[in-house]
Structure formats: structure tokens, C-alpha cells
Image (cartoon, rainbow, N blue to C red):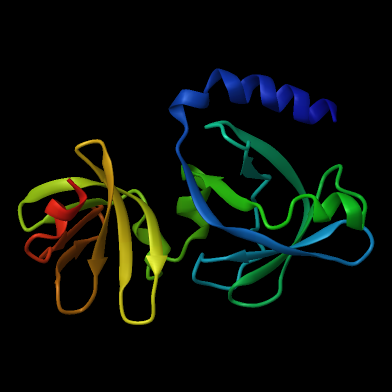
Length: 188
């Protein structure tokens, strides 16, 4: 518990500097000792090696609270079994389901597969030559993904699929698409 208090103090000091990315949610509790099943979109089977904390967002707030990982075990390409510090019963674990799980930008870069759609978080989305904004959410659908960006202070969803993707620059973190005519006007 003392570890959490020290961390929270330093966490609140640098709150405005850190960016967080949603990677999934706690789908269920597992067993009697407070283990949780994390359903994630990291694009690979992972035990989150080297990760010390995940974050949960406080309700109706922009604050993220760290939960320290005691143990993590990869179950499948989209599930990891987590044991969190101070979560020691099935009842305590159930209070965290189905909450969304977030990683800070540094840990996200380490653990997300480059080829997965969630790897586009933080990229800048362009309509041919004009910047629309940073991708803040990726919604996977069967034949396309929807990228949520903030454009002119409004959230808009831009489809990205094989037919409208012009280019993708991993190193520059840029995605260029041909946005269907009139789509942005619908949001304005």
C-alpha cells in the first residue's frame, strides 16, 4: 500500500505530461484469490513482461489510477491473466469488471504489436494532405477500422480500409486516407 501512495504522489505531479491508451478491459474475475482476465487488443500473446502497472480511469474524471501487477500470465492472443496488488478476493476482483484498462504511452509502445490496428493510437490521421488529428481510439470492425480523432473540437469517426488507405508511415506516425466526400461535414 505504501508503494501505491508514493507512486500516486509522483503520478499526480506528472499527470498532465502522460498520455494513456485504452488496451482492453477486465472481462471477468478468475478463481478465489482475485485474479482477473484482461481482454486486450495488443495484437499478440503477451504476459506483459516488464510492466509494473496498468491504469484504470476514475469514473467521470480524467484521472488514471495505477494498479500494480504482481503476476501476469498469457492465456491467448487476446487474453492475459493478471494478479494485482491489494486485490486478494473474488469479490474485490469483481468490482473491477468490466472496467477499461489503460497503459501509459511508453508501456503501450513496448507491448502493442506494430501490425495490429490498436498500434495506430497516437498516429496523426491525414485526409490526403490535411491533418485531421491524432487517433485517440481505434474501433475494429470486420472489414474496416474506425479511427476516432478530434477535429475542430469534435470527435469524428473516420473509416480506414483497403480501398481508402493511401499510405501508412510507421516511423513518422502518419496515416493518410481518402475520406469519403461529405463525411466530415456530417460531424460539423
